Length: 245
Image (tube, rainbow, N blue to C red; front, side, top):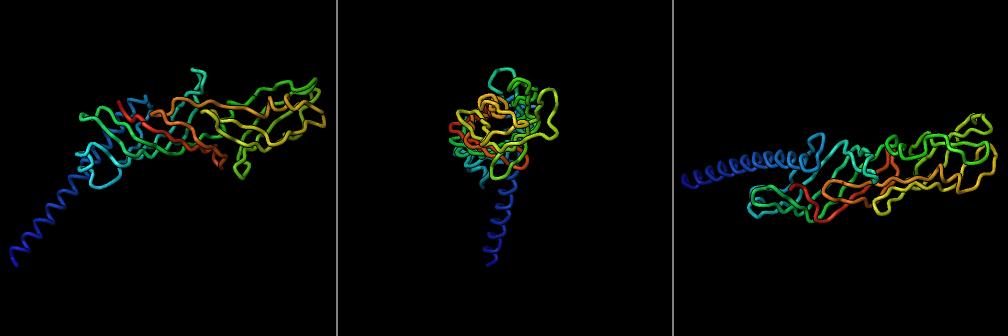
């Protein structure tokens, strides 16, 4: 019995040491992965990297990690014209089946899903915020975007008729979709500007707009989008997503 107790104590001690070593190793690996991702994507801040699953060391031996969560704040994505950038406030991605090289210089995830948020004031930069003529004597421009409820964007437009600004801005609920990496905002109806009849195409030139978003980390792509209280929430996905190298 004494020998059995000693054996159990040794097993418990070794198990505890293994857990400690495993957690130390995973913390080190998370830091290394964050630094490599920052360098690969040329990020201004270090991303959050969390390696899931236990034990970590056995995953390392197999050369594949089951699940890695990545968080990037204030990511600047390309706006599609090669010069402009659009800020993504919060990008969260769940990477599955991450294969890495023997020297850890490269890592690729079999699949990835996640979410991102674009603030309304950032998306507003895409809309026509400067007064534009929509009819003789009538100019209009978008002055605000906000949550319209039920997944809609509320587009607020200010208009001037014959040199007089209308006392109150007009607003319209708009649907937001994503097609081929482009976020598109389209009014469900058309606002009226002081009772003046204006061709639909001229009104939509103001109310409707789109924003191309390129160059998301690792090659992930936009999937779905909807309006939310703090901005436009986007679902992203990808396959063979490069984390480093």
